[in-house]
Image 1 (cartoon, rainbow, N blue to C red):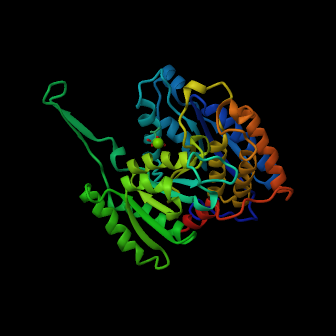
Image 2 (cartoon, protein in one colour):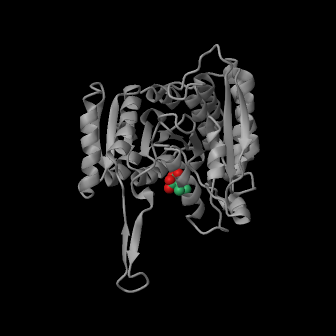
Image 3 (cartoon, rainbow, N blue to C red):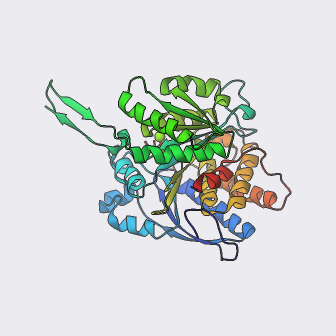
Length: 388
Ligand code: IPM
Ligand code: MG
């Protein structure tokens, strides 16, 4: 497989090696559902996968002390992509697993782009009164390796009334340019509109680098219209006028915050998916639902597997299995439309049952008994944007 183009040669057997990291809380439950859908997809679309399960997360850390160790990194690197559940548990102090595994992986594997679609699917209930699917179809491109997430800083006079905490945010031209360029390519394949989201009036140094980069790169993409919105204004526009946006590019921390808001608008964290994309093929990309480990509902069958299954679809799109990816998205939408609610007992079935419904719906879509979802799919956009 050619990782940089995301294309297959149809004459080659289509086989992909997947690392599976179920993690903590509801992670294993939703990952199992995604794998059940993957089983169905393999039979229907004629590709195969090998799956290497990698133990990591709270239990593994407490037993072994291991986080994103060189050993785990090597095992993950031996695969074409990583399916990730979720990580975090009350038994481990906040931040240890998040920084020690998730952020360490995003940085070590240069997963430069965190791609987070915000699409209100037909039949899905949104808390935003009056919002309709035709008005809500955008993609947020979050920088994924820099900004405040580099985790650098210091505290002087710690523990005294004179304590000084310094927290750094790092923005490199290379880091900014590669995500802005990706966002331009994605926008060019969609409605041709790119919005930079930042806080250039306050974070003047970083803001200037981001705005200059957008301005300079826009010369290469004459068909893409550019726009700018401050991050606080984004929190107003996103729920009230999402139709204003096609592709939004933003820094790591702003992206973390506005993508949770985006998830709410599209029906909740249970349905939101993401791709952590390595752009140069130097390491595997990673695919995870946006939700966390939700330890309070773990083991109850209350978790919505849609986000994890849609993340699997993004993984397949990345690997070049565009038809399977689109069909899985369509199948998820069929099932979401039949659910009474988007989480908990209101879903009308357990996590595993919802997964089985999606697998069955996938067979219907593949056989043409059920229609493909209409409109632009981020699955197609990912393929267009991955070709530099
Ligand atoms: C996310 C999460 C992570 C982040 C945490 C778990 C480290 O909130 O993927 O958005 O802050 O990036
Ligand atoms: Mg987050």
